[in-house]
Image 1 (tube, rainbow, N blue to C red):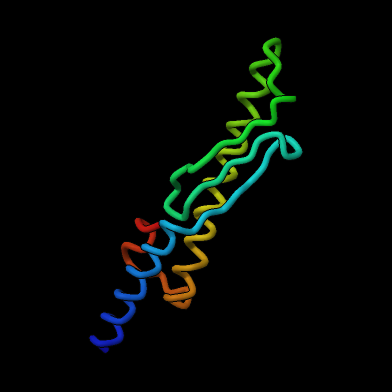
Image 2: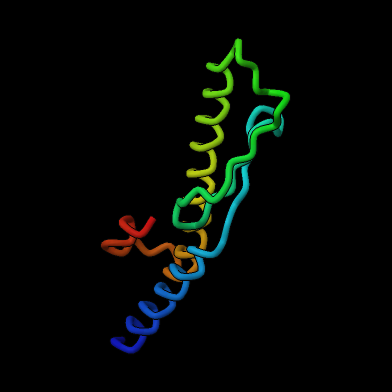
Length: 100
């Protein structure tokens, strides 16, 4: 049993390291805003279509960026949950929530 737990720990650490390198990309506003984020919720890039940059409507651009960032964070958390959940078989392990 102890060996199984140690193996699970090692696999979880490896998966955490891999999540740091894995990315998801989401878009908002029909592709006007694109955000790439890692499995550790670190934003790597934000791309804004120049056509949506309207100095008269900065609020719309801010709303699009906010929506895209929040969607990217959710997608990143889902990626982490899928990768780590595959290791634990859906077990509710103490401390696992802190990793997501």
